[in-house]
Length: 386
Ligand SMILES: C[S@@+](CC[C@H](N)C(=O)[O-])C[C@H]1O[C@@H](n2cnc3c(N)ncnc32)[C@H](O)[C@@H]1O
Image (cartoon, helix red, strand yellow):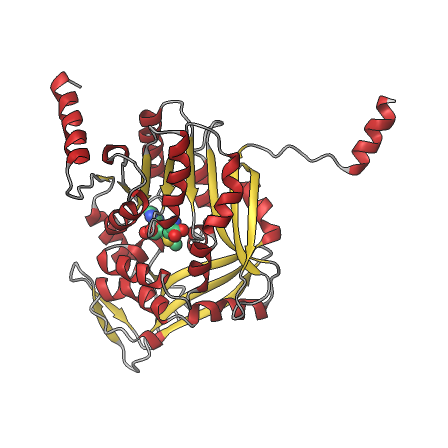
């Protein structure tokens, strides 16, 4: 890099910092035409009455300005319990784990959303590292703009210390590039990565995603993971989990917004269906599907003018979510090559929610857990040492 290149970067940083206009610099990692092609491919799936053919995968549910606004509305809906509870109780849960995070951390946030939680994290980290760099990573540039503004508003973080990255973090090659970028920017200084708001539960291969994301974590770094949990697994509880999502109209509007903005379908929110099941010994799983209930085979058009057949009774899977069995969290964390440093749990203290549903916030570090001494070991050691 030449001296004048260096000046340009410095001038740009100063121009952003000194302007009252809300500039944001975004690093765009992928060609958005490729993303559209991938979405089109996902909507070409075979007919299925239970959401196993056509689908909108996680990042696409939030992609674009319509879904971003619909998401912000859903988060404010008191009937969308998982998100409401996750946002309301985050201050308390974060307060219980943040003491384990030392000095000098930067922050990389996977999936910024509305930015409310990142703001609390930044406030804490900034007190211990005034030179903090904040990298929110999201597939939706509109979500990045919305979330980053909320996260950084009046927290005292200068504009050029914020580096929003538009990237699909479910693609392994993207993570390899992100890893290089982050390490070049922070050097050996520690990073707190986060994946909050039960985002992990939205991916078919959630175990693989967690392993790929946590592979960025070096020995000096930490990873904050927030998931929705259940004390027990049963078909009845899967039905209760379904109820939780089904009762929010704002949530139905959010899940259909990707269809509204990327197809010419006339959306009927009553055609949104929720299918609950038990996923082995690890989670309650909820598939949200949109079913063609018009009685006719129809054609839907995508933004690139591709026409896709949508036969009567066929479905499009709009969203996937889970509530993880609390017992399964340790094995899930271990399988990703991580260990729990500390964690906190909060129950849904609301009458409409099933017993045993809640949120867990886990602070993870790389490596094997140090095995806790068993009572027998202590006895053996006392005998041996005497
Ligand atoms: C459930 S919201 C969680 C938001 C926030 N972390 C919270 O806890 O309130 C998921 C966020 O992750 C983003 N996202 C989902 N899948 C993604 C992907 N594959 N790549 C990048 N961002 C993704 C969405 O755009 C959205 O901002």
